[in-house]
Image (cartoon, rainbow, N blue to C red; front, side):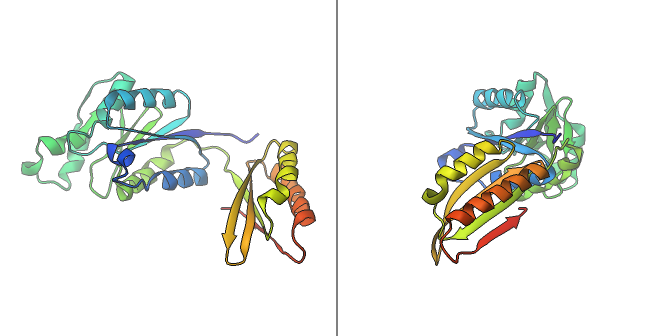
Length: 254
């Protein structure tokens, strides 16, 4: 039986909700997790408010195998993610000697002021997630991975924590396209096939190129046999409904 490991992403920051900063992490994380066999099931965005962060974190960490947070672990007053995570887990938080030592690899001790030391405050019991870009670490406590919001830093943190994560069966994918085929042409028979193949996730996406409209059908499953059966059925359906002389393009993976 395919094994499923689930995750949620919690994006933290007023700047995301206001539109001042455009998120560049959600797509990267979801694609990364899919590739290693972790299914992202939910994404939330919350402001820099402790109660909101704690409530969202507690809801998500009890529902999914992992929660990945981004943002709010810098040196300023509104960087309250670490404190909020500690509160959610009911543990104290203080400057961690390991994290402080990491900061000293880049920052002279005379410059390690109160603001910069905020980046070394880690909830008790957490495992550090190394950051080769700026040295200020993220951390993992329980099933929660707390990472920076800066994309380049988040990405190296994700690389460093990934080998420690439990993963499930990878999702397989097939994409089927035919020029000139519109969603309205195949909506009903495609829905019938979706019900006939419950082990396969079937999506339909209207597309357009310089030749006009077409429909992209995406089939996803963790069982190769189920996916192959659904693919054969959908290709046959598309063949019956596509415009004359239109070629069917089938792409597997990615």
